[in-house]
Image 1: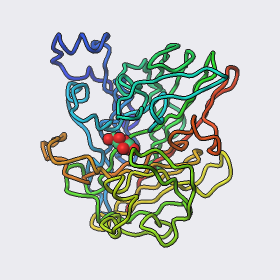
Image 2: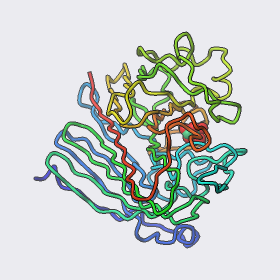
Image 3: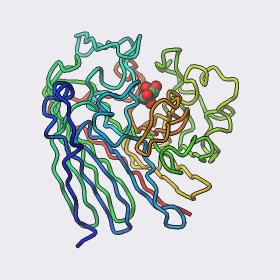
Amino acid sequence: MKNLIVTLFGFFLLASSALAQQVEDFDSIQLYTLTNRQGMKVKITNYGAIITSIMVPDRDGKMADVALGYDRVEDYINAVDKPYFGAIVGRYGNRIAEGAFTLDGETYTLAINNPPNHLHGGVIGFDKVVWGARLTRGSGWQGVELKYRAKDKEEGYPGNLDVTVTYKLTDKNELRVEYQATTDKATPVNLTQHSYFNLKGEGEGTILDHELMISAKQYTPVDEGLIPTGELPDVAGTPFDFTSPKPIGRDIGQEDQQLEYGLGYDHNFVLDKSEGEMSLAARVHEPTTGRILEIRTTEPGIQFYCGNFLDGRLKGKSGKPYVHRGGFCLETQHYPDSPNQPNFPSTILKPGDVYQSTTVFKFSAE
Ligand code: GLA
């Protein structure tokens, strides 16, 4: 059927030799377009397993691209300030304190790429490598399966880790992200999806009027370096209470030490659920367009980051600047720094076990 045809493009024509040196197999970088019966369109590249575009209708059927990003692969490779637009983050999403952890009696040291800590898998994390990719389809969906082998000691982590991430666009306007990984040596694993959304459309101002609900009665407060203190306080009575929907901007200006540390929201929320349960983690509603994003996940946590480091210097696909708080991320995950926090759910994958995680981004409008 015509609307189920998956198109495959060579990604961006002009690869300079300098870029070709940075990325070994530049020629194999592709852009895949998934479509569904409702006209939704999602673009994914095998560079960093990045979602580059998500076209969704508003309440009047008007389409807009709600994902921040670039339209040239060079811009992803050279990105200033490394915003991780749309990428799969690994081997460990978010921070590991001082880039060190001890496992089975051995201490491992990782790059300090967010001084004094390690962030998002290191200098060349899963967001900056070329993945193997193939198109795949089933009843009511079409997708892209991406594979990457992170070698033993890559970015300092133990074990060869074989990762598969499958993106599936369904006819119900859901974008499913299915993660799987196996290892030959015990290692921390914490994979996430780092899309920035603006449900008005990318480049259409700030996200402060978006109404957000997070299914979390607790969160993990942090120190100045954004490492969790280990406590799990209640959100009730704090700016972190999103248990009922409220505009993201309502309490963001409150005097609060946690908001100061994060320069706004940049915190992990402890989802209300039993272990491994697939449940609603967050719901976002944009009042002017009526667009809604619901996120379901099997993960125990979600990092809510509201684009505090965006400052208008980066220009996106339409040439419009990405202003301060011009996009939000809701990164499903295990809690930051888990390898050093014995009271947090474990992120250690052992040989013979299979890491499995699923997150669903569902779009609608009302
Ligand atoms: C995550 C982190 C933030 C920041 C962004 C990328 O959300 O928690 O502090 O590093 O990624 O800019």
